[in-house]
Length: 176
Image 1 (cartoon, rainbow, N blue to C red):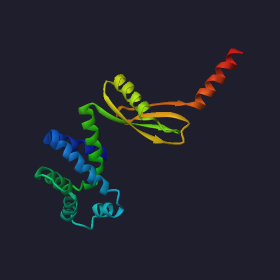
Image 2 (cartoon, rainbow, N blue to C red; image 1 turned 90 degrees about the vertical axis):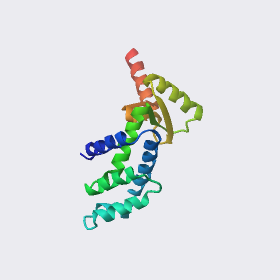
Image 3 (tube, rainbow, N blue to C red; image 1 turned 90 degrees about the horizontal axis):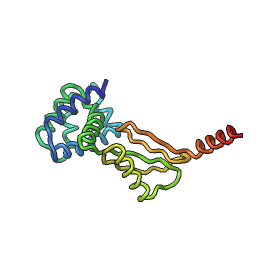
Image 4 (cartoon, rainbow, N blue to C red; image 1 turned 180 degrees about the vertical axis):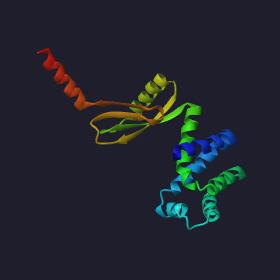
């Protein structure tokens, strides 16, 4: 339900802000979203004992260099009791901007470090396949093999050494 509501607010942001303004709003919302990682901040925003106006002032005080439209947006969220949606709004805005710019970010999970050249090769290959600009972040994990995820495109692919061994054994047994 919250994502549906967040999509409506993001649509309003996309209609109100263009180009550099939109990038600035995205960066500001990213910073505001980080504040929700602090338990005390989330408690203050979610408690009904604190006045909506005070909550709005708290959130606006976190804004460094904002224009009147963004402050009005925060006021609207506050009036409707939707300040807790700011992280969802940021995620949805990030997704919509990615769609608009045809740029996506993915993750590469592997038990060994992936070199920069390997990551660039994967970026080119996946970019060509999906007709988009794709960048990857490499993360070390316990996964035996390589796993690639591009959440915004709904893509997940993997190469597992264990699965390869099992398939080779099965093939050999069938041949006998």
